[in-house]
Image 1 (cartoon, helix red, strand yellow):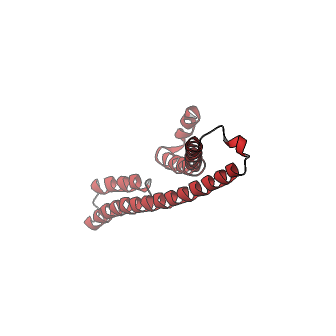
Image 2 (cartoon, rainbow, N blue to C red):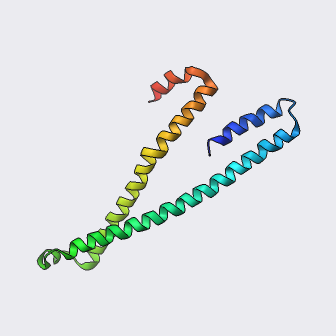
Image 3 (cartoon, rainbow, N blue to C red):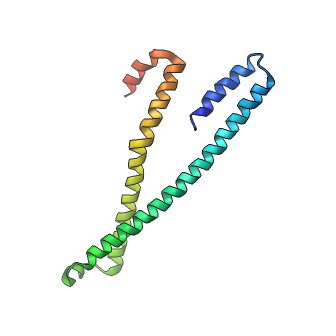
Length: 137
């Protein structure tokens, strides 16, 4: 949704330099506002879902690691105090959670944005953008 605003802004600029009816300009302005509002709501909802999934992931990983620690022999557990083991578990689980979030951005969000932005660049500037994109890559 965030990439639709520049398209609407382009249409709004075209509206300002033409003799289109006023209702079309109002509709474009309301469209830009609606896209921003819906985008903010969708992003907040996805963040809420992502946080819930992260908490469930953290709880299950901590429980699994703790269960595995409890299966160790007593002399193996003597090396670290309970507090140090708890600190290591939560730190490692938080790192795993952050890695999964970054992996989602790397594998899903970034390629989608690259394709959409590439399409808009080619539509705006023509095929001359392809050699420049090759040089940048």
